[in-house]
Length: 399
Image 1 (cartoon, rainbow, N blue to C red):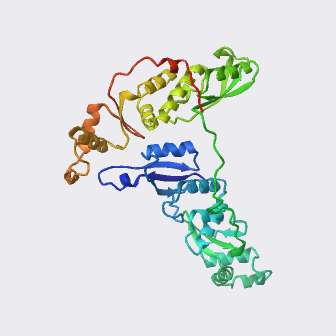
Image 2: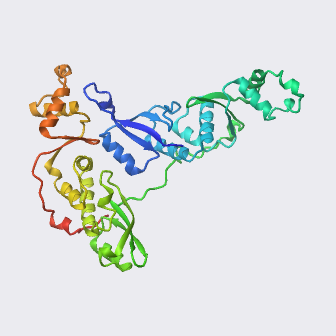
């Protein structure tokens, strides 16, 4: 199954008549890093409530069988289960969901994916097609081996209707196509694999790094994995294990980075000095700790960082930028600047009659501000050229 597309949003911005706020889209199943990035794009912090506003399947159809505002961790787990299904299994699943007497909650939906072995799903849009399917495939004993002329007289709609009633099957629609589903398992055979005391959980993800490089000695093909940030001595010891003393001796077999806006060439080529990359990893780790990670990602989205030096220079000068995270479009930016410039209460009823669109475009141009997925960013001061000494040497550790 293709990924599920959802939109997560802050209700206060989503429902605000003064803002043009799209929330953030996310493909499920998703990693912890991908989910956090969507939260940043939706301007959602740990203290702010959020909702799943839209949930679309891989073919662009609303997943109307889901409960309203499902918990994101449960929805991600369900997406993980459905991602491994073939099309016919998806149809089985939806058929079983449609058979439920009450709208199922997320826990029940996840458990349904573990109870599909006795469900049959057939491509039939009505009783007549179902009856013909059953007869043609010899699924009803009394209609097997009849004379050919008898088959021409059969009332397939009546046969299909009788079979559906006897089996307790249903007709349902998936993405514009109709199917018939029947479950041959009894209600007491339903297995509660997950429960409130045993909730579904995805396997733990590897964490604790900004960059992860798989490096090989060009001459011997021996390889090691280096995670950064790390103590310099640690990196040196690992390189020495495979006899690497100069950068021309190694190849980068694979490279991972948790920062979505950082170009791959910054961290994935032998020309990228490992110790300078380690310095950048420490700097980004500090930015995350200080709660300014969304701002840094906005800076990366607005300004070119095609090298370690560029990315480090932005990180070293994060205080030289002004960040408007709640502004998604120029009108929102104009509103924010207007409030700050004239010290006006955003709740003043008089503001309902003001149109900030033209003002927003004008002030964006005046400020030379840049619109990014994380909000608007503008440079307000001269950027320093030098790095601090500790960062330049790649010193420090990670807990």
